[in-house]
Amino acid sequence: MPAEVDGFAIPRLVCYLGRWWYRGGWYPRRVLRLVRRRRARWGGTDPHERAEVSGRIVSLRWPILHYTYTDVGDHLRSLNKLTAVAATQPGVLRRVGAARLVAEPAWRFVRAYLVRLAFLDGFPGLFVAATGAFYVFLRWAKVRERREEQATFTLDPPTDGP
Image (tube, rainbow, N blue to C red; front, side, top):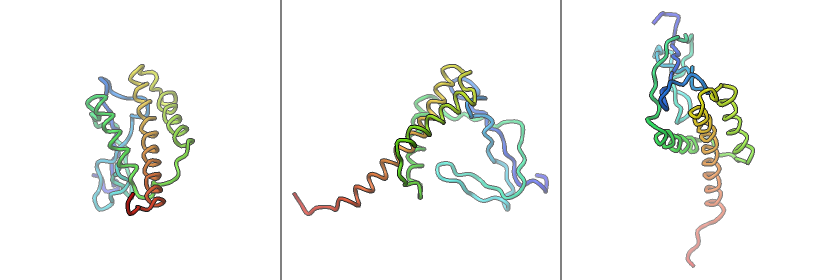
């Protein structure tokens, strides 16, 4: 690694639903993979922890080939797992109203499907945009559920019997 470089960001090219994803916001989703250890630390928020580098990061041209999900069922299981972890992060408990449950997923869908051209991939593009929106919706729904559960526990003290 050249002395003036502290890390390399590599584009990630995803294979899913029988194709390579260049649209919909999945490419080039650069990931920091090669780092100078003395200039890096671990950061981000679970479930999306990542290496963070203080210094110069160079973007590489050739992608990492990434086989994210084996099939639709695997994708949905992953969404459920990732949203469950995200909803339990410290500081995430806040009021989640209808605007966050509707507007944020809607924007995620519009951004992937229209702005980032997933519609050009036909039904698979629609599916990827919809599952991206569903991820956001599910994450906030789980945060809301967790907040309401905690409010219930603090408002309703246990009784001694019937």
